[in-house]
Image 1 (cartoon, rainbow, N blue to C red):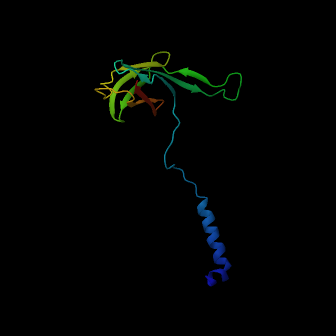
Image 2: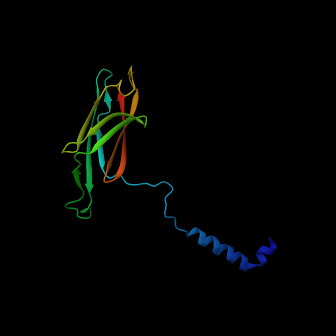
Image 3: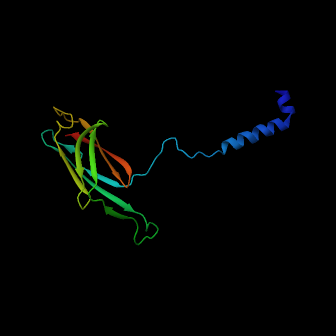
Length: 147
């Protein structure tokens, strides 16, 4: 340790090496996060055990060209003819939907089709609405519960 302190040029070289290594830029993120190309609003969460599950989705594209103009702001444009796939358990497809001119698609499905042959109060199922818009894939998660 005494030899290390006696030689200040070695200490300075080590500090410079460490500082240059701290400034290395990485072009690839560890987890490549991409913002969703659409805003999806899902409605319908709690349903009776004897009733079908009905979830309405509204899909909108957010036009942010006037974000700095407080008179206009962000505009919401409905996404028409967008193919949506509904999954349960990440891989099991339970429905395929297409949005209408207002960007709305309605899912109506039984509890049995969601994997609950005997739905009990409080049981939850996680739905995943997936699609691709402008070559960017997206997923929106939504929980439905037995009343």
